[in-house]
Image (cartoon, rainbow, N blue to C red; front, side, top):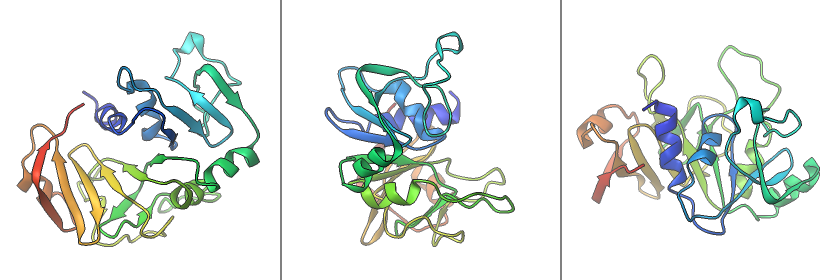
Amino acid sequence: METREFIARRVAKEFDNGMVINLGIGLPTGAANYIPAGVKVILQTENGGLMFGPKPSRDQADPDIANAGGEPITLLPGAAAFDLSTSFCIIRGGHVDATVLGALEVDGEGNIANWQIPGKYVPGMGGGMDLLTGARRVIVALQHTDKDGQSKIRRRCQLPLSAAHAVNRIITDRAVMDVTEEGLLLREIAPGYSVSDVIAATEAELTPATDIKEMEI
């Protein structure tokens, strides 16, 4: 299974009935395709939509219906479209139960850096700052290491922060970790990895939970 799909499938396991969930640009949007059977959630896209569904096939895509990253989406029965200011009233008003965001790096204190790419021009962080401070729960979804094998789970973020002490849970292709007052708690490990494997691949200090289990997708 492709790494991004594995992470997206595990992210979807976080969803419960009735939740309003914002899926960030990139990897997190894939979770819309894997919502567990019987679970009814309201997915929000920050460019102005509620109740979107899985990604459509190429021949079914409508160029006028897209998420904040410009990717085609489907609208479910009862969906609503509205302007950007209304969308951010939902976010800033505390009406989003959870947001799932990608990141360049995240650390053991719940700090996150996800907007400034080294050596590249970016116009700004977009709605990330609002989501990180406005959502009731923040889940970060990212690959555990970069292309050079360096950990993205840092002792302390080195890149400009999007928000400080905002992250609740981190989901990677190797593990599920919770941010606690004592640091990162290792909750789950991916099939094929051991606790020692995950600790060795993580720059931040990890404490294994007493009831640690294998990730299920």
